Image 1 (tube, rainbow, N blue to C red):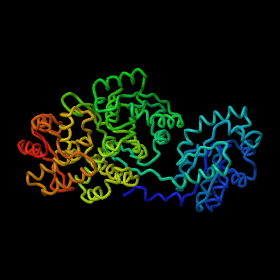
Image 2 (image 1 turned 30 degrees about the horizontal axis):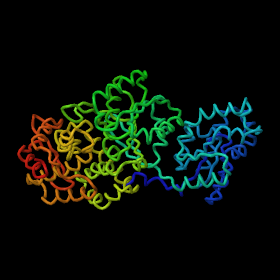
Image 3 (image 1 turned 60 degrees about the horizontal axis):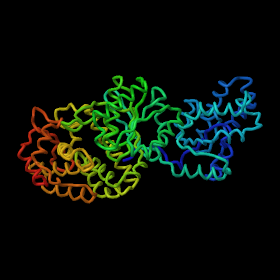
Image 4 (image 1 turned 60 degrees about the vertical axis):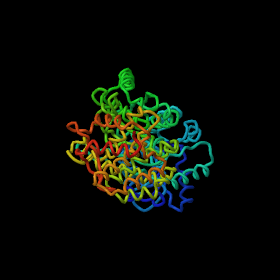
Length: 548
């Protein structure tokens, strides 16, 4: 199911070490090559051998541009002859064509990041470094670091160096290579644009580098909530600093109450007071509430500014961060004010799910199992087999399920981005949601019932309603209820008034011509939309499942 089957594992890829002069690329590279049983090459030495003169002489006689052209050819040649360990010069990775050569060769790039004082000590007295001979080495290294670090941060792996002996840093590099897993990638293809959803561990710490090539300018405005800020904001801002991206933050209270006019106005006031322009990117760091609020602000501020989603809840990673639905709630219902507005990029870091309370993780699972109930009975069977492991924190199960759910949603959204098809289309993603939104409205959008918990109950109710109308097998609703209950999700209405729930449903934005509109099923994996559902049948389903 992974998109990355075409990418060879790290054990089959060349290793390219990048970083500033003095980072230890040659010393570490030689030891790493011995450890891995691979040939080692130093790009600078190969350039000198090919040119018949030292790098200093090449700079003096031909200039830096001629040196860079030769460097590019040498790196391309070295990477075309089997797996190697290659130490590059400090400026090599700065060239986009050289970076493309490394990528096209399926080589794994490793940035050896070192503090400036360490680099100064290591390069002291080395007269063969042309760039250091032009002035104060410490000042030159500071300037080079500021210029190059945002590009070095594009490397696949970052290993911090220090005063540790070379064998210690070598072991750290080898361990990082052994544990490296490329992110899974799903492309969301739309009629006039497309964007990627990256899924994997460690993406938050590399967010700045992953976003940098897409941002129209290196400035962003982060929207998050208090809980997420305490856990993850520092990691994100550090990655932005590494990539040379300026940033400000806006923090809201956690919970559905922040999807309000008041929060939206406060956010807009902060954005405008910060004098953002149309090239300033808004980053949503948080769950579905933050993503919806930040996305609506991005769609509205200056009539639209760039937007990146970094979802930190399972529910947001598999559902709300993908597809471009943004908005806030009103006293009349959930998500009734908003816009379709697509992000530049979605970064779903599965590592941050470790910080989720079990209840939040279970709530997110409802949106995963929904994909199988809509269109894929085999995936629903997979959920029954592996759902418990996923909710318990199994990383492989989580990554597999997130990728599948995102891929499924991307396909549906790509075919019906703005939910305009008269039947089926994107509306199928609302399976269980007409019930769920009514349950949320009646319980006040608070902590009594999380969105995913409401969806879980809604999925059971949709199956029950479908069976009661003679459309689906009677055994489906009990089967779904048993599975979701085993995961720890509520599957019955907790004594809420049926008439109140019906009143909320009549305000649902999916209704047409004053008629209730539902997503029903003919069986597991066979969902369809229907605008011909008798109100009495809906009432009977509510009463049969715990309403009063």
